Length: 469
Image (cartoon, rainbow, N blue to C red):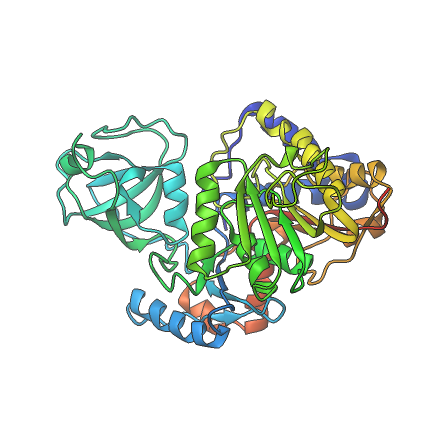
């Protein structure tokens, strides 16, 4: 059931992806019809939000049971008594899952319209209200307190301040305007703050604005899995190479019981500031964040002992997480992907530079987890094939927990190697809506299974380094 149109790509990117998902290895194994069906299903899934909102509990400060109770009460308050369950995951015992109700198809559309940018629109589909910076256009006579219908300008073609927009727009639901049109677009008016309070979103998902901020971290399910797979231990020295905004960094520190050292790097100063803010909010003291380019993090000469930041000497870390910069095609929802083919293909060489540095910084016997939030072969399975060929000291390792599917064919890896990889493929489950009745009739095991599959597109590989050569 596809409520929104399939994700659209620039023509050159669409041609590139078509070849990836119709590669000869895949067709030989599954047949042309099955391959085509899976690809079309993937395109539909990417334009829709995941079926569950996933929150990670900060177990450093609170128990999962305690947070679950408070969260259930908060959701009942937000949903005006509607009873939506909060589920514990049997294999990821620090996350809670909240089913997303929708898409709701019989909402009345109002004459007064607010158009928001694509990124704001995607946030609304995952439970956010509309904030002023995300508003592109509003109807001519809109006043504070008006009932308005909110639409997303998925192609980015609406002019800021326009009084009406006849281009491609996608209905996101209804809300109450907090400000008038003139206040929103006034040169001296507010640049921040809430613009529209959503009261009838197409997808009903809780808002987490200021909800248990030190106890919860909003995080996609596969992003939680990767930290468990790295499995950091108290007292170890861990490197998170591309760490912003700090979700995985803070998770690693929590799994280590805040004992040891987690070095977080990112080359953008504002993002490093965000990592530090998140560490402080979650009361984690073992995190040290640095503004630094990961490709230059290896020191070629002996450094001062007092220097705690990058660059680092070879074999300095027990475990390394390389959650690499990537083309981001697995993010959901996304209705119009904006990158060019040149931009998409620029990530593979960057990932290899970072990976090479990571291998050199890892101690013998150390563990390296590589992950991306994209769906291409070139950034995922091809990188694994390249790494195994380039670094004989690396061996692929089984992953625990293994919740996603195996790796995708097409990069020349053996079936045994593919089984060691973990690819979260949203097309692995039929696209379906969820209403309150079907939710109450569902078994908890079935809901957990759906949450494992109907999430963002993501990839994880785990390696161990056998020696220092």
